[in-house]
Length: 418
Image 1 (cartoon, rainbow, N blue to C red):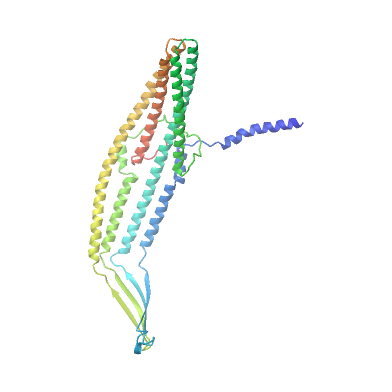
Image 2: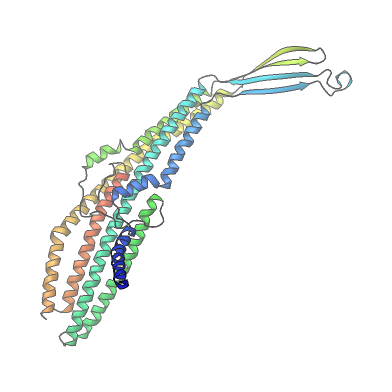
């Protein structure tokens, strides 16, 4: 009875353990999920959001009217003779304020609004850049997963070939030098496998850092490198450059400079400082109202210097924008040409070179098994097959990488491929 109950418990545990292991195993991650985690957890994006709040607080502060001032004065006390003590003192209580003229407050308010708009756009740019970087890192993980698979295939292929060479050498069908060559090929394949494993681990941590993580808390990256989305034409991508968040940032920067110019213009109008108070003369026991007004001199000359500085900044910004536009088109053109070449290389590998290499490998294997081919012919065919698989992975990864880099130029919106 006890034995039967124990058997039932063991059977239940045997069924439960795989479920627990499956629940603990990290789930795979798609590109969309990786981008979502980045947009919600990136410290850089949180910093950008805080900078928008800083700009809003600064704008609200600068839009306030000058504060009232309260002051008090005590004259003609603690002197000598009849002014000894406080019998002849004069106490004055003043209330004053700076009266701004020329629309200074409205100019500051407009400057604050312009700076807030630019900070928000910079936040949008940061989101696009973060999503594109995540896309680049996701592609790197996909590519390294494929490279690791190919490296494992290479090791298995080298082990099988070595075992066949051992049998051929023992039967005196092949020279012993073939065995040494097979040992070298196996060791080289194992080193490549170790390297591929390290590269994948580094790529996974790099992807996790996109949302502030230090460890890769996800399973396999889910996606297909071989699915190459069709890119827009160069003309369409070029047109997008002028409507990208980066182009909007240039426009918003110009608006900020224009708002600063308006602030400089209003600073040329002097402000009026006025105070109103009550004075009490202790010796007479009387009170009187006092008022003062002051106006600073030299405001226009100072404002002229601010305007000259602003004009120089606007001119420099104009030339910088023209240079940036030319450089953006140059980089777009170069990356677009590389993109087309990556697709051509990928299609040639997939449709022509890899099928031919596979046929060559099959024939070499058959010839070696039949004793008609030397081991060197088999080794060359195996190396060619593995190398072409690596090139296919590299071409696909390069295509997706270039698409993401074109997105970073602002020529397109970040896609959901692979």
